[in-house]
Length: 498
Image (tube, rainbow, N blue to C red; front, side):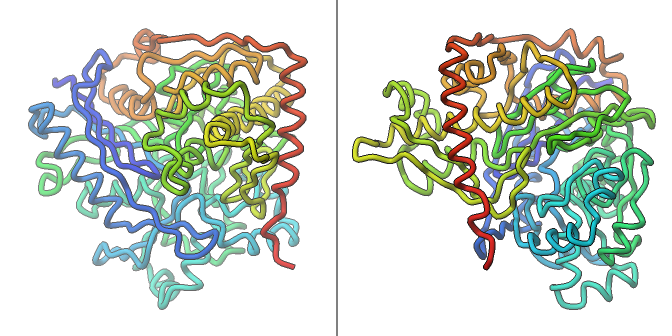
């Protein structure tokens, strides 16, 4: 059997395809940027055809780079940006409109209404989430309410709803499979991961017909084969997981108490809690880490909406530098931020604050402030937000984490990793390959078909590239955190109408 496993990594700002061999080495990789649109303040959209088109082109490019035929791929794993919501016509495969991206805030007032109705406790108990526009449920309600004829077609069974994984599965199988996995289903605010069933109360309240919903599968296991007319061969699709769950798996955080933080467009910290779900008292989410053989491993998650995207904004929105990699040297060029704090609440605040009306804020500017101070403040904001999440996790679990495993594009920034270690007062461990999201998807798929025997075999493939130890005094850190907290408070509630 071929030992090549292909991972499709469909993210918010790019689509990637990576081919791994049996030693988890990268054989080939291809990436293409994915456009993102902001049609109104707080609205974030993507074109479904571009999501699939960019992914399809990277598949072809990776195969060509590796000099492999499609039938030489043993299995495919899919990992994806979560909560992004798509609806399409089952008869034609045509979307009813643009995808509403996870960062979108257009349903904030509906979420306020659901909270006022007293649904927060039900949502927490039966989905593990909080009521927020971040999740798919209110996005789907909006599509059915606002797009012409959508509700009528949905009630007739002609429409399909899915997160990005479902859209890719539909395309890869030529429209034969409408499915998702437990991790992606759990991000909809419509699925009960504890009962492993769609939640009837939420479906009824939001007027969502069951005929819209995908089948829910394990994260590791053969779901279907690709359509040869689409992929070039019938290849098993054997692993599916949302990007942050895949990263936890790719970081080999298989034991309860192990945690990782991914620095991508946002920042997402997950702590493995084993087979027992823990419910947070501090605004964290209870979510399946993965489901294998019908059994869930659970995690606590803290979601930060804007992580690496703040660096992208400084680059593309303000033109302060040409490449994101320049920020490490810029940050090191000044002794500190000069008292500047940047709170990147461009689309509200996630965990542990959950304020959809917060907006981006820069405080502490003086005539002495220059672009290096802003670059440093942006990088520091990523670490501060991650600190707030880890602190909440430790409060919830009574665990004291000794080492945090990090990954994602921004984890390559040495300044960020060192500052993160300083602010956490914990060691930060960076793996040899920071693209652990794609690796996790490959691991899930390869495990299902026997490329790897068990998780012990996967754990043996993980290796550390560098470890960052705290260097600042706790007194200094507490002073910095106090000022950060003041800055966060100033960002809250800014966009609330009235």
